[in-house]
Image (cartoon, rainbow, N blue to C red; front, side, top):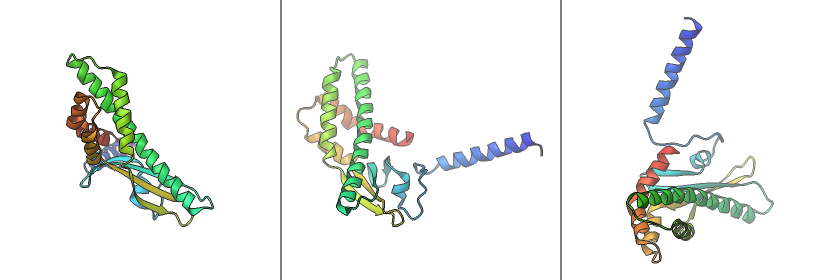
Length: 187
């Protein structure tokens, strides 16, 4: 075989392998490759849609600090900050989609009011973020924490919010899972 045929064959094999990999559960590739670490350390922060539900997972890390409690607290806070970051991205998409939806229906909306209500909802939801795991790399002494926010919990929080625009609240209730699923597939 000449070089061109080998190149074509290599590309075809890569394409088949790539398409086969896309057929299963959505997984986040990691460049960490830490041996012995739990999967969540190597997968990192992500939207996760699996049998446990629709979950926002944030992973944080802290190097040795000479104070174990400070190191754990730092890793936990960084994990929570990661959940805040992806929740904020999610809410940005919700806000844009809602604004477009309202405009296409001929309703005028105050974008600042919508943004303020979504920011408030985000802050309230962040109080529900839980640390669900920690891992310490025995070789380096680094600590990793994973924080979780469940989409179902976010929906429950939304139902209890009284000072939110009723149309926005209904839109998030009806479309929130679809938006989450789309983001999870993209990532």
